[in-house]
Length: 279
Ligand code: AMP
Image (cartoon, rainbow, N blue to C red; front, side, top):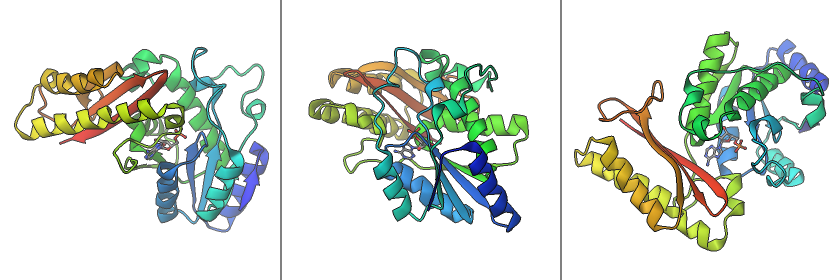
């Protein structure tokens, strides 16, 4: 496995692979890898001859009051996990090689980014779309794998690639959960043992709402109330609970089309997200 830290070296390596007729897949991550990331790597192997994992804690997707400085990092362990997973290259660029001191160009998606996490994190998605574009340019990948865990991000990236005619295919992998149902996340490390247990209420809320939907409850308000009660009763603080169209992320009052139930909630200072598709 090759560890690459410069854009020029990454582009050179990818060009060589392409000249050999090999396809390239990329799994963009912020590191501190867990089984969710590893499932994306496995998926990437299904689509491409060469698999690149990128590890970059992207400063522009964090607001000034967010957890950029404390975001968990362990590059050595990440590289070992990638090697075990037969990754061909890990791209770990330095921040100043990605963002020049006078960086002034942004990729902005203007519709889907307005909803859900975009409301509480208004600059987040332009940081994501910009870094993802840069990583696509650096790796020249044919495929990219993203997780359904970040459902809104996945939709925005798909929209961006469509709108900009980027020559890459986006694949979405399912959410990987801990055995008790908590969606895996690098940020779970912040949770105290008590918060970790309380946070199971998010998944319990989703399950209860799904059950109610199956019993023919189609009102979004009713389902959101079910989830809200679970989270509040467990000591969590709701950022949002939304039931939105899968196609445009607009809020639905009645569930009469495929929808996404999306949740963001705080346990202590830790903001967790989770979601589920209802059809
Ligand atoms: P992150 O390192 O948190 O920025 O995530 C990198 C990629 O891994 C994103 O596409 C995420 O959606 C995906 N991911 C994170 N957690 C999970 C999970 N529990 N299951 C599946 N994919 C995940």
